[in-house]
Length: 171
Image (tube, rainbow, N blue to C red; front, side):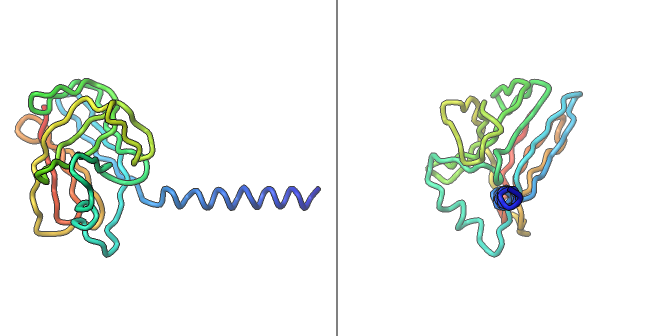
């Protein structure tokens, strides 16, 4: 009986250790308070580890999405209604994605599903898509970095990886 208990305990411990490999990336958080509205983004932080961002995201076909991080989906939470250009994002919790267009440009996609594994994306739950401005940075960011900053009476969303920076503004 004691041997069976030790064997079961060992199997449980081994399973627990192997599961940690599925979420090996650290998590990051971006926060901003804008006109009394709290906005938070929780995301996984993959690293390039000698790879090139262009090789990784360059393989993504047009029309497909990048999860803007790693592991669990990137989660956007706001306790107030926001405007991204002429697109309304009501208060709530969403997953964020970047959709690659045929011309190589990117759009920020808000999806009503959140908390799922980061590669599980349901197009039917997309409800807002806004254009992202792409710039090439002089310095390279080893890990995905998402920031929220105050800008021109509103806010700016930014995701940087490698030498690519994608941005959009909101109010």
